[in-house]
Image (cartoon, rainbow, N blue to C red; front, side, top):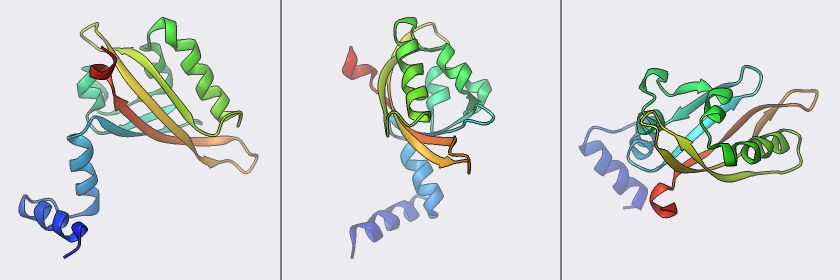
Length: 141
């Protein structure tokens, strides 16, 4: 029996059977989340429990990149913003930065973001970015 089949069997036993459910289960129980950003609309979607971790339940895992960056610590905000700009302009191939983000309890928590351009317009402009978000507060403190 392969390890994949064993994991699937275990998850089936607790009522998790589809590939989407397996991914959802994994992200809900880890400190790593997937995010996507539509650069045309500025829509940012986070798959996992990030918004509840931050206390932003009213956003139901959806916001804008502008909303997100407005919560980054002032001393890291410009560097992080520049990393996203450099990624969109093709100056870097992969986004990789750590920063503090203020949650709704006015506490600063550490996150690490990685990402890459997922699609381009025919003009060559980046239209979507996807990546991972890792909660690293315990490692930083």
